[in-house]
Image 1 (cartoon, one colour):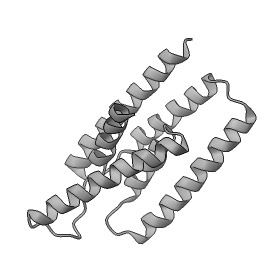
Image 2 (cartoon, rainbow, N blue to C red):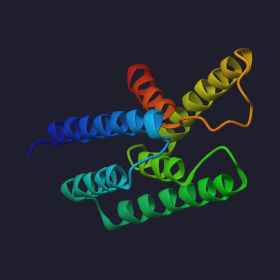
Image 3 (tube, rainbow, N blue to C red):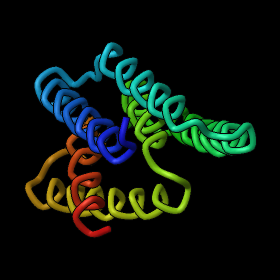
Image 4 (cartoon, rainbow, N blue to C red):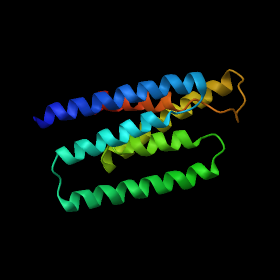
Length: 147
């Protein structure tokens, strides 16, 4: 199978799953585990189809493990981010190499700051839980457009 076709399908699945997460997060303030599982296994299948070397698999395991560990430690201290948001960020990171992940996170942080400032301007409670998945979806779309 052509790798470009696989890449397009992979990222289409990624965007559709993020859209589903976005809609359920806005409506119910939760991220469905079944969507996280689909994202995880679709990425694993793509990695297997890409015939990576053992060294590449080890690198992926280490960089994603470090990212998820740091995210989990930060998430445990934060009161405004839930377990579903942490799982969504961890599985979303699988779709980016480390350099691209840093750019994607920077875009997401800018969006979060703008959203937070807008919420404060409208008089919302600064400790209120926010739907996080829309920021993930928009930041991924902006990343694809910019990069």
